[in-house]
Length: 306
View 1 (tube, rainbow, N blue to C red):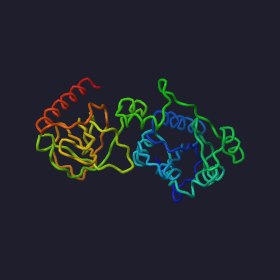
View 2: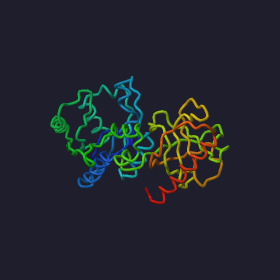
View 3: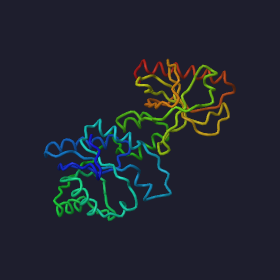
View 4: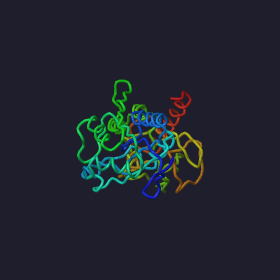
């Protein structure tokens, strides 16, 4: 996938779509797959126009919205979906003040956009035109054809990033994954911890995550772990570690059947199922027994392939 910028914008006509695409969920994938199909049909290159940070952080500065996907995660998914080009913009006040006509003119003149595919509820520009027909009319004045993509429904649920955030904050990983069309992931670097897990034969890798990343509800999860180019089964704990009087949220994973020093190493977790709430135990021995039970549950889940 070609990453476009002011210094890298080959002169090729393009079929574009615009959006933040947080999570790149099933609805987004439906639109992006249509973009690829339509671009090929019209002999154009596909282009996804997105933003490095959530526009809501500029438009509603008091909000503390957490993201389903970081910029690097989005770019990786865009590439996997076969998109030919991506333009990742910094959403700042200057961009926020551009009208829809100014924004579309920039895409036409600077990045050779000749057709635009819009999601069913998408608006762009500070003037936020009222209807899809308004965007079609605007495009006609500029020589840009504007097409509509219908709403994607999964079962009886309209797929949205906000709905997926709700599921994750409730710990409902399975429904979140269903709407994402993929496992929810957490990627971070391994940092040193208190070594308490090692004392009870359950050593953990403590992950430092990007500050903007949404961390699901506290609890114990079955996960797949990608580390050092290999995949392992794992047991993830998100919480404050009440048994050892913890006072801040940590994200730590016990990697099954793995030994090695991985401090400073990037690790990716794919969350599969939430097993239970985090709770306080009366002793480390009691905690160890529960962790052994959790481990057996996870092994059983993997044998049944969830």
